[in-house]
Amino acid sequence: MQESQEMREADAKLLELSADKEAQEIAEARKDAIWVRNHMMECLREETEIRVREETEARVHEECDKAEAEKLESVKSMLADGFPPSTIAKHIKLSIEEIEKLK
Image (cartoon, rainbow, N blue to C red):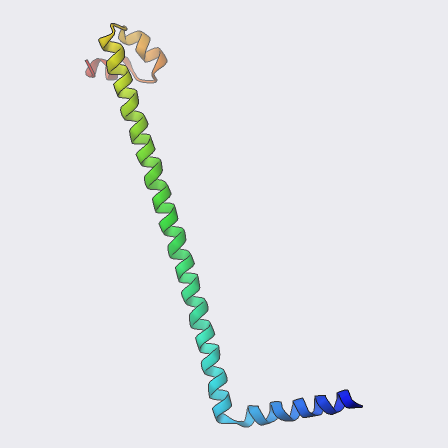
């Protein structure tokens, strides 16, 4: 019996609040604020993902450039030590023409 009384009181309060224009406006403002917060969080998440992807791509390009520079230095060193271009080409994935240009 107590529980049904509490339910009736809750239903009455709900009806009272629903009829109250100010309470409706507060509830609507709260709903809007939650939507804005969620939208901002989603935008921040997307911006973070983009920034991380761009930074990762930049690091990959930097590492590739570094590896390519090291490879060219190795070729120059091997040429200076008298290795023939055909031997260098076999071990360092470059064409003989590319190696000849480094002489």
